[in-house]
Every structure is written in structure tokens, then in C-alpha cells.
Length: 87
Image 1 (cartoon, rainbow, N blue to C red):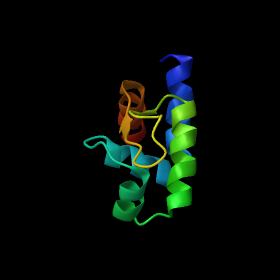
Image 2: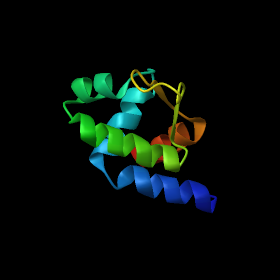
Image 3: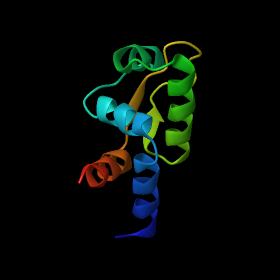
């Protein structure tokens, strides 16, 4: 297993909220507000977590130029890391 994948698996497993958000985005494209409501998390927590996940290329923002209504989706790397984290 390559080093980058090991690092991101570790990130995914480091927080229950990270796993929740990635699981939620696995089948959906959603805004931080929708994610927060669906998972009963604070908006600030979701935004902070999404920023961290973007830094590690586990999620991507589909419309980064928007101030309101940014849409997020899981990346292929995020799906792969989530798959290994679930094992």
C-alpha cells in the first residue's frame, strides 16, 4: 500500500465526524448546511472538517467561487480511503 493512501486512511480514522461526512458524501453532492443538518453536527465543525478534507484531497468543492451554496463531493482518493477505513 502506498504511503499517501496510508496517510489518508489514518486521517479518516482519526475522527468519527470525518468518517460520517465522507460516508454521507459517498452517494451525494451537498452543501455544508445540508451535511450539518443531516448528521446533527454544527455548521462550524462541518466547515472545518471539509477544509481539512480538501487539504488532503479527500473531498472537493465543485463551485469554489460561490460564497453561499458551495457543493462538496468525495474524491476517488476519499472513496478509497473510506473503503479501507471501513475494513
